[in-house]
Amino acid sequence: MATWLITGCSTGLGRALADAVLARGDEAAVTARDPAAVRDLVSAHPDRALALALDVTDPAQVAEAARRTRERFGGVDVLVNNAGYGYRAAVEEADDADVQRLFATNFHGAVAMIKAVLPDMRARRRGTIVNISSIGARICAPGSGYYAATKAALEAMTSSLRKELAPLGITAMSVEPGGFRTDFAGRSLTQSAEPIADYADTAGRRRKEHDTAHGNQPGDPARAAEAIITAVGAAEPPALLLLGSDAVDAAGGVLDAQRAELAAWRALSTSTDFA
Figure 1 (cartoon, rainbow, N blue to C red):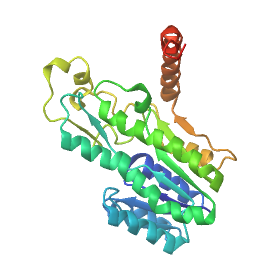
Figure 2 (figure 1 turned 90 degrees about the horizontal axis):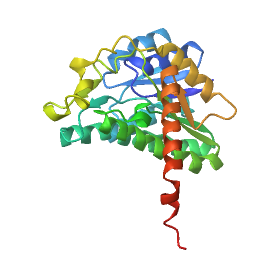
Figure 3 (figure 1 turned 180 degrees about the vertical axis):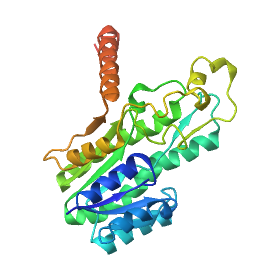
């Protein structure tokens, strides 16, 4: 039986993962800004579920969530940093305060959670850290520059963390979902207040009022949850797990384009070495 600490469990992928983990007999600390949103999970699994109030931007709540999980279950085997939200704006039109809040949640909040659980994981020489990123970090769509930046930062940090933790028996991995039928493109998606007309045909096309994808995404959150559980339980978990056929196709296209550009500019790139 493993103990999971999952952030952002009120809806979407976090909720689906909490359901799946508890259904298979594991223990889970399920968190949300409003713990009432996850109390039904505890009611269904009172011996193995713990509902916690958690705003990952609040250091006191982060420390308390880690402490209470350890006290209840004896330690965290799997931390899943799922809490986060989307933000759409052209780079120029974004509000600085909006961007700071986005990074505070999507990147710094995940780092705070990692730091809260790692001392215990190091002491026990085992554990897994799963950071939920996005295919957006790879495709960098217009209008998603800041959101993509938070997820790209999360992935880069996770790649270094994985190398630091491997000798200690601890695994770190990133997960890049494509489009899933969650509330991400609904309640969990914010955007700049004042669009700039010059970006109407780029970033503007992806504003919420023009979005037709919500409710039509190809991904099933329940299947995504099972895929994450499978990857976490693998003998050698991947450094990066893509979720969804759309994510796999998009990542392949990005890699092909990068390889082609690398080849096209190779001569100039390598000309900078000392002769």
